[in-house]
Image (cartoon, rainbow, N blue to C red; front, side):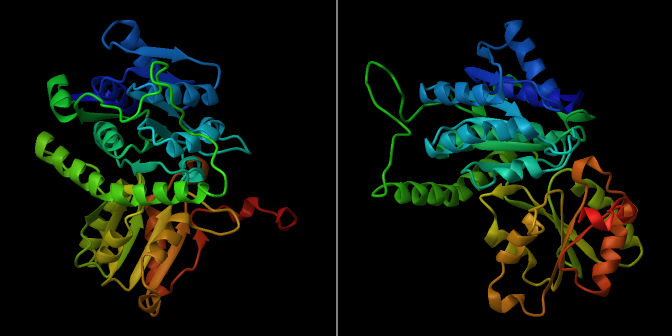
Length: 391
């Protein structure tokens, strides 16, 4: 049923229809509306689940870890500093192969304090062993949660669904909300592989000395690589069941005939599509490659989509301090060394701390890389606010 609904509430009601047994979270802007709504759904008896109030994000992550280890379908949500406070447990959840689903309402990280959107928080834990899916709009944000539980429970890997804070979490958009019956048919009850139960004593996440530790990392790495097929299969099954494309590895927009390819992810791709349409009317051939699954990184899909493109620009809302663009590095890594020669892969960081990315800035980016490649630069940087003594 099509509803005009806030993004956070669309996610909350979709998560509820996935029937989690245990939910635990600590409120933090801009994630709060998601867990407030879920708490209300549980309180009013619409969902038979336990909502565990905690004093911090570290505790929330620890609660869902324990619940999942005991065989429960478990869910949490957070953002920014909250995700960083969870980070110790985030790594433990992946190492223990617990299929937990987490919503990250992407937000900048401190200092200075910012409550606004960028994607530096989820990027900070990109190598923790979680699958990371990025939503373009609120329809996809809701849809990805249905897929996330199924992917997690088939791969025994945790899944983080990333949606841009405020831009999506607080935006009202039409969202086709599924029926409970549809979700139940798509997502069967969780069947845990191992359960921590005092009746059958066992341990998980135990000490591993140098004889064993490296093998655990290898197994987790390979499991993430193998999850590629599951992500594709679940996305395809979702499309067949619900009649709309959502998720998967990558998506493209007017890319096949493009002379210039833009690579990006998250909500900014909507603005990029508008620019591409404008440029098309002006006779320019520009296309988009949208990254839907950031971890595992779709290296083969990126290469196959861009192998005929000699001019590529990566736009991202995240930054590796002292290094540059994170997504740009991944895109460059997707090409064999021999094929990087004479191929221009430019890199821009924009929108940090919620700074708007206007159409004029995107147009400037396109016109600049049409003239010459840009190794790395910031888009929309106010240089008049920067003093030489601060550098």
